[in-house]
Amino acid sequence: MNEPTQTESPTGTGGPCFSRRIARCGLGAGPLAIRTLQANVTKLCNQACVHCHVDASPVRTEQMSLECVNRCLEILDEGDAIENLDLTGGAPELNPHFDYFVGEARKLGKHVMVRHNLTVTLDGNPRTGEAKRYIPEFFAENRVEVVSSLPYYSEYFTDRQRGKGVFEKSIESLRMLNREGYGAGELELNLVYNPAGAFLPPSQKSLEADFRRRLEEDHGVRFDSLYAMTNMPINRFEKELRRKNIYDDYMEKLVNAFNPETVEGLMCRNMLSVGHDGRIYDCDFNQMLEMQARAGGKPLTVFDLDLGEAMGREIRFGVHCFGCTAGAGSGCGGETAA
Ligand code: SF4
Ligand code: SF4
Image 1 (spheres, rainbow, N blue to C red):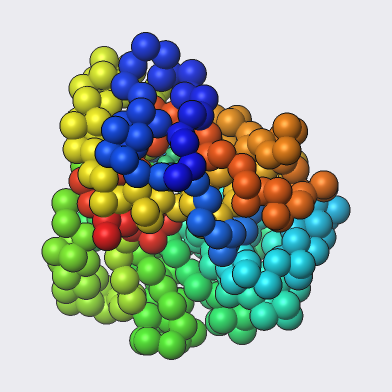
Image 2 (image 1 turned 90 degrees about the horizontal axis):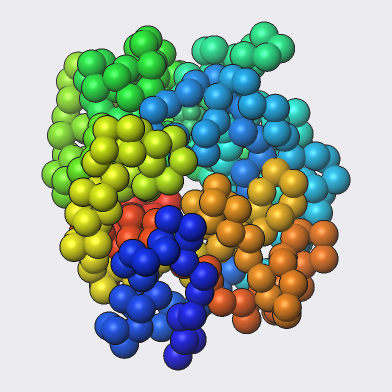
């Protein structure tokens, strides 16, 4: 068993310890494989959502360089076991090398998934004004799996979390994806729900059924699966919780809802997450907390990565990790409980 002795996050001092909680359950939580390389290619986004754990917005300028993109492609090529490239941001489509990255990864035979916010297709690049209406067709041509946040099937709750007009644009963008063949069983279109406040998501299965019925009946929109994700108590959402003085209540909710059956499926156990500057983390959340992964006595970067060494690393847990193990669990693909 990999003894969990990790650094807890800065907010964890004196508070509940995630590593100890796992150890108390007699569970190991070391890396199992590196099946996915996730790359956060930009912090620029056409939106500035209230719950955004990346702090992305139209004023951010960070972009992954071509050199770093090429190094990620070399890693994908080296690691036969790495099946997936997961592109995220910000709005990943706003990185100038995005199309190249997708195309080259597909040539290597990798499954590519994109965390696509839907509205970028209609808004375009907020800094340059460059149009992005070609995105649905580009995704279809490259058989990209599209994973898109849609906080709710109603305009009121979606716009409250993501900004005025977002729901209407999201529906239009979903229709464009449907016209390209997405959501009909062959090209995968998955939606992500996250709660509009400091509470855990309801059952993914029942939410999915509600979303499917309402989106089809009210808007003629189809999708494949719905992933329910917990809001992580970091960055913009953490600030919001603290501003409302409910951070401790929310953390207590997460800690009390700890479910040992989620530990096996923690996404950090099967992936590496790369920042725009090439630094490597156990997951996107650790990336936002600047908890860089370490192995062989040094911090990991794509520029000198040894995949074997990375498999031997200890995952850096923190109190925020209780967001991944609460209730039915939460990961890139929604619920994680066994
Ligand atoms: S669309 Fe996504 S990346 Fe952009 S601000 Fe909203 S949550 Fe953050
Ligand atoms: S936040 Fe979740 S995925 Fe990231 S290290 Fe913690 S448990 Fe793992």
